[in-house]
Image 1 (cartoon, rainbow, N blue to C red):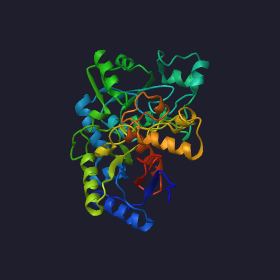
Image 2: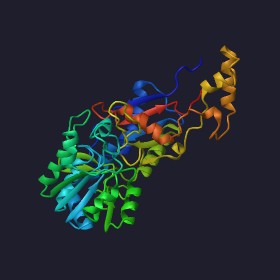
Image 3: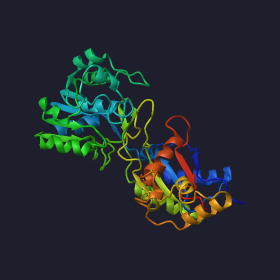
Image 4: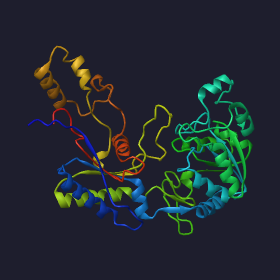
Amino acid sequence: MERRVGTVSRGLRAPIIRQGDDLKKIVVEVLLGAAESDNFEIRDKDILAVTEAVVARAQGNYATVSQIAEDVKEKLGGETIGVIFPILSRNRFSVCLKGIAKGVKKIVLMLSYPSDEVGNHLVDIDLLDEKNINPYTDVLSQEQFENLFGKSKHTFTGMDYVNYYKQLIEEEGAEAEIIFSNNPKTILDYTKNVLTCDIHTRERSKRRLKDAGADVVLGLDDLMNESVSGSGFNTKYGLLGSNKATEDTVKLFPCDCTEFVKSIQNEIREKTGKTIEVMVYGDGAFKDPVGKIWELADPVVSPGYTDGLEGTPNEVKIKYLADNDFADLSGEALKNAISEFIKNKDSDLSGSMVAQGTTPRRLTDLIGSLCDLTSGSGDKGTPIVYIQGYFDNYTK
């Protein structure tokens, strides 16, 4: 019988993961148990994905406010520092900011506007036109900003992040001054010691600040990149990718993910004879059309994956073939012609007209986004995702 189903993404329920748990054993048992209970077959080239949150939790990769403060004081001097371009998030940045403030005497907090890097808006962009404000050149104090636009409120949560962040800083005993600018060099009018908190543009921000004469320039990836007083750490990403664990603790991005996924791949191969692909995933990479939020607050979608997930899709656009090359065919003749074309397609379709309109993104970013949407971020209880048929095409 002809197969009628293409890609299937299953969220797999798992026990609550705690620090020190044997996560590899748990993941393998969850997959094998799900296959048996849900009556599906494990096949070569299936994809098993595990959320970074449970990997880091099992590793015990945590840092406290005090440990962050200790690192900040050691690396940035403990006096007045500029903290620029943070994202607006209670989950992602609030505890980090508490630690940063605890380690210094004053923070000049410079926020980008009208939105942060991942699309959380402080002000409607149309209001900038109405008030004749140029976000590329104009620098605003908090007083000027609020006189022009009023108190800021997040689209979905209603949070006033400007005053929330100011309050967090002051509660840790530091003085807070807030300004608004999209030029990293603006901060050098206030201090020469700078912590740039942007995620995907951090290297450019660091370079521009250093070229402009900053004394000390660090990113979030330069904090907690080694253990501080027994803390967890991430040598590559530091505080990037961290999440709030408690009011005084963050869970850092997991370490050694490549080793982890390869060990699971080997274990599944030993138990089933099948070679599946395995990845660790965090945030997906997609944009909300209403809130304008670009989801990717992690430094990467996947911090570790097996070799078969390297690269980008190599696909043809079926509707292009149907409307152009085989426009005179229909029914079984059209199906056979397209199937034969797919079977004989070039190994690299980059720049080809038959590939136009296919998504030019890395496999791990596409699959990680599918996983993030499948598992959700709330109470589904499915931190493991199993995908079948992703590498199939119309001929399979």
